[in-house]
Image 1 (cartoon, rainbow, N blue to C red):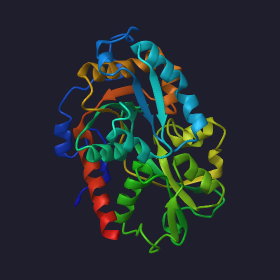
Image 2: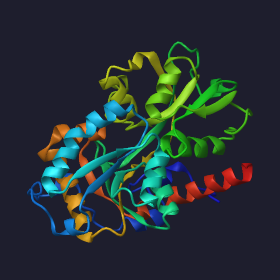
Image 3: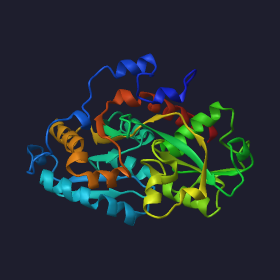
Image 4: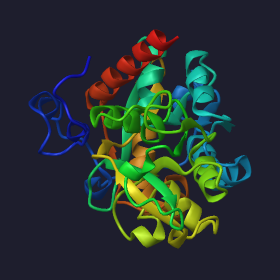
Length: 332
């Protein structure tokens, strides 16, 4: 059980709890100080063990937009490493986790909860390689609860008796962390003790659309928490929807924001060659400078690039995930 801890422990900064601070006593490489150029094109020796590169894509966005955003990224990976590269879009987060367990994909960018779930499901068979940095150089984001601006709801307390859409059961900002935080505020997140009902929107984008269409009073989703809120912040689901013309932030009101959450990692199977994992790191550390348009597409906005991470950065998320899984078993 998690006791006497707050979500502030999830942010990777000098304010970390001592245990997490010790886990960060290393010097991770990051885009802004990485001096090597973009990797030269050419087939790598590891291709004998990885004859094709299969990249999992999380759900939460309509498939046409998702494949469109990642099309140039896939082509660049294929040109750079000289192996056929395929994208595996899943209808939900669970599909990518299952693909890792079945060794049907090599890599995927996961949310923190998704990484924790994959790590638990595979008994440590996946590892984090690097994560996105925000505009201020941090590697954290936030969960936000949004309502329609014309709903009359201006605070979390006014959500009593109202309906709430979660994004996905394997989402960190769209499920795990809001539930964790709200329970510790004394708000019942199961049944009808506080909300009139809760349900799943089918993904981040779909949950926001459900609020726009008045199917739910509120939804939780992810945002960088930085930049202009009227543009959906600098990065995240809201920003992506604004950029695609699906959302005008004047239609919405944010009534709750979580403490910072460590960004999710680019995740690879641990049984892959070390040289492949190093090439993956170098490709992404140099991507924002070498191919800024592709970088912005895959990250749904802009930041300062990428930074290496380790499993220690996600230990608290793993612990919270275990607690949530135990709670589900008790409810069933």
